[in-house]
Image 1 (spheres, rainbow, N blue to C red):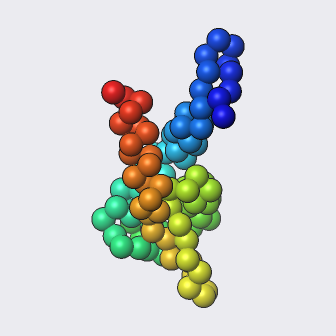
Image 2: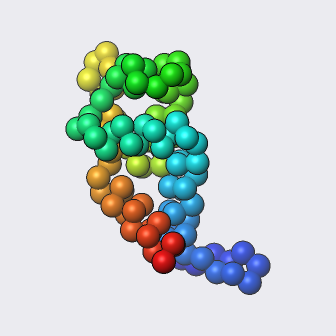
Image 3: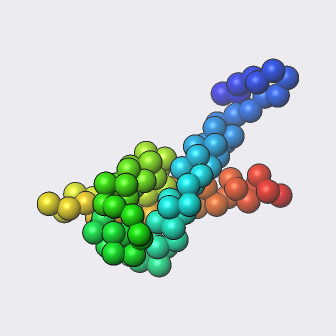
Length: 101
């Protein structure tokens, strides 16, 4: 479905790109994604060890990334294991590449 912003129309791809861009709009979230790219998965505590911020702040950033679909979490009581959502990460890369071309 296309939407109109004044005279400019945009579709679902534009909305999805904006969702990914918003999720990546904070340096900590970019650092988390870069860390996860080099790991098969990690727990919040792993990120606390490599980032100079509190666990609660990291959890907030993980929530934003998860809500965008860029990462996914799997409950491993009492922890949550996080990894990049490979399917959505490929979509995000393609949308950004298309945008910058």
